Structures are given as C-alpha cells and as structure tokens.
Length: 136
Image 1 (cartoon, rainbow, N blue to C red):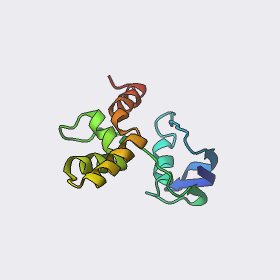
Image 2 (image 1 turned 60 degrees about the horizontal axis):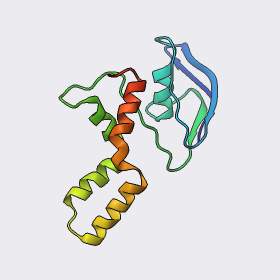
Image 3 (image 1 turned 135 degrees about the vertical axis):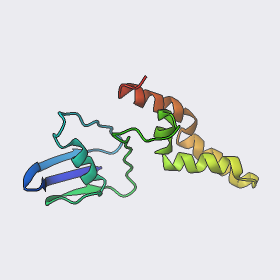
Image 4 (image 1 turned 180 degrees about the horizontal axis):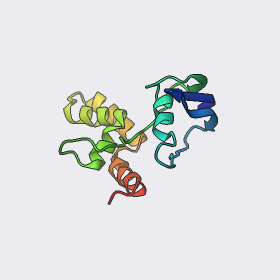
C-alpha cells in the first residue's frame, strides 16, 4: 500500500502541494492527471524519494513496486514498448537469465517464475498501457 499523509512541498516559497493525503491499496493502478504546473511530476518525485517533502510522509509497503514512464521520450532507437518492458526489472532479469542459463534445474525455476509473473504477456500489457496513454 502507498500512504501519503499531510504532504507539503514548496519551491522557492511557492506551495506546490499543501497537506496532500491519499492511500492506494496494493494491486491498484492509478494515473495522475491535471493542468501543467499542478504538481503531478513533483508528487511522483516525492513518492519515488527523488526529492523530500517540507512536511508530511510518504510510506510504501515493503516490496511495493511503482512503474513510471518518463515524461520526455528518451533519446535513442528504442521503441516505447521496449522502454515500458525495461521498467519491469524482474521480468528483464529473468528473460535474460532464460537465454543464458545452462543448468537445466535453474532454467526450469526461471521459467516457472516467468510463468508465475505472466512475463510472456508483458508485451501485450505494455501495448495496452501505452494505448491508454495515447500512444499508437
């Protein structure tokens, strides 16, 4: 669970967030929408621990995962689906291990975990996420 309690953040004396509170239960997905300058990116940076609040707390349960897509497209030749898939670190690590592991028992464990996390449906899920964000 993600818990935000009384979060306040100021930049150069200007209040960006003032006593914001919210809870997001495990397994739920949310999107942040709002006008430019409303504080969406700032809130996400606070949740990720990239910046620190002036007041209040952000708490994530141990083992919680937050997936993000950069606001600006990264340079390079990667397609958006690959960028989204790379965000799932466990899937990426296991897919690489499945290609390089030579021990049959370890390989079986890897494939069992890949099946458990639905790794092979990852590209389809990534395309749905991107479509929901307006990518064609």
